[in-house]
Amino acid sequence: VQAGSPILHGYFRSSCSWRVRIAFALKGVEYDQLPVNLIKDGGQQLTEEYKALNPMQQVPAVEIDGTTLSQSLAVIQYIDETRPGPRLLPADPKARAQVRMISDLIASGIQPLQNLYVIQKIGAEKMQWSQHFIDRGFQALEPILKQTAGKYCVGDEISMADICLVPQVYNAERFKVDVGKYPTIKRLNEALLEIEAFQVSHPSRQPDTPDDLRA
Amino acid sequence: MHGHNFCRTLCQQSELTTRCHLHFTLVLNADLRPILHGYFRSSCSWRVRIAFALKGVEYDQLPVNLIKDGGQQLTEEYKALNPMQQVPAVEIDGTTLSQSLAVIQYIDETRPGPRLLPADPKARAQVRMISDLIASGIQPLQNLYVIQKIGAEKMQWSQHFIDRGFQALEPILKQTAGKYCVGDEISMADICLVPQVYNAERFKVDVGKYPTIKRLNEALLEIEAFQVSHPSRQPDTPDDLRA
Image (cartoon, rainbow over the protein chains, first blue to last red):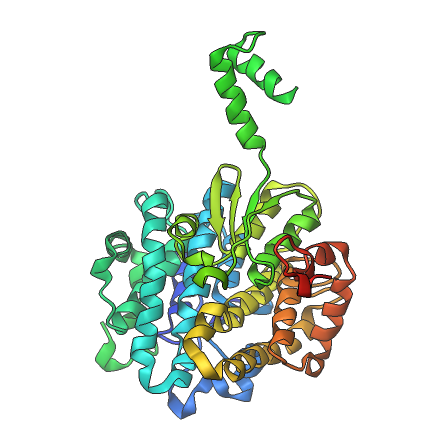
C-alpha cells in the first residue's frame, strides 16, 4: 500500500465499488485496493474491523486525504471536486441536476432493491424480485435518457450518470434482464464500454476477480 | 414593469407589439414559481419543502395523493412528469426534475440564501454521505411501493431497515455533528434526517435508542423551515392529521 494514495475497500463485482473505480480511472488517480469479499467467511463486510470503516457494513468505503468516506456518489463528487482532470459533473446547473437525477434513479431507485443484503432477506424469490426492480427502474430511465442523452447519458460529455449506468447494466445482465428492451440504455452502455476507464475498472479485471471470471 | 422592460430591450420598441407580447409571455412563464408535485406525508417531498423554506423560495404545490384512486402517481399524466411514478417531481426554471437530492442541490446552486451544502469539500462529502445513507440506504427500502410488495410483514421489514440504517447513522453523526448533522450549519443532511425520523416514528421505531439522531431531530424541529414544511401543515394534509 503506497503511502498517500487513496485506498478503496470494495468487491470486484459490487456495482457501487465499480462506480468509484471508474471515477478514479477517469480522473487518472492511482489508488490501492483492499478487497472485501462479500461472500467468504460469511461476508467480510460484517467484521468489526470493516464496521469501523463503514458502519453500514457495505462496500465501498474509501480512505482518502486523511478521512474515510462511504456512499459511492459522495465519494465520486468528492473526487471530482478535489482532483483535476475531466469534470464528472457538467458546469451547467440544469445539466448537473439531470446527471444527479439519473445517478440517483439508479443509486436510490434500483440498486438498493437488488443488493446482496436485500436479496438475502428476500430469499427464494430473489431473481424475480431483482428483475422486477431493475425493469421498473429501466422503464423509467429509458424515456429520461431519450431526452437527456447525446453521445452519453447527459449531452456529449461523460458524467457521473454514465458511471452509474454501466455497472447497473452489468447487474441487470447478472439477473437476466433483457436490456435489449431499452435501446437507449443499451446503446449508451455499449459506447461507454469502449472507453478505457470503464474497461480497466471492469469486474473481470480486479485484484480480487476469481480466476474463472477473469478477463 | 419587469416584463415590459425586458421586452423593450429585446424588441427595441417602446410599445407592446404582438412580437413583444410573445416575449412578455415567455418572461412571465419564466417568472412563474416552482411547482412541487408531492404528498404531505412523503418524506422525499418534505425534504424538498424544507429546502425551499430554508432558501426562502416561494412555490406552488400540486398534491399527488398516493393512496386515492389507486394512487394518483400511477396516472399517465403524472408519469409524463416523472417516469418513475414517484413523488416528488418539481417543475422549475422551465424544466422538470425528480429525485429529491438532485432537486435540492439544484435549488442550492441557483438560489441565493444560506448554503445547503458546506463550502469545504470534506464536509460536503460528509453531508452527501449522510444524505445518501438515508436516501439510498433506508428510505427506498420502506417506501410505499416496496412495502406494498412486501405485504403482511411490512411493519417488521420497514422497522428492520430503518433500525439498520439508524444503527449506522448514529456513530457517523457522533463524529460529524456539531449543532447540526455536520458541524454547526444546517445542511442537506439535516433536510434528510428529520423526515426519516418522522418515517421511523410512523413505523414505531424507538428513536430513543439513537441519542444523537434524537437530539438533532429535536433541535431541527425548532426551526421554522422544518415546521412550515411539516406534513401536518400542507395543503393536502387530511383534517384529522392537521396541526
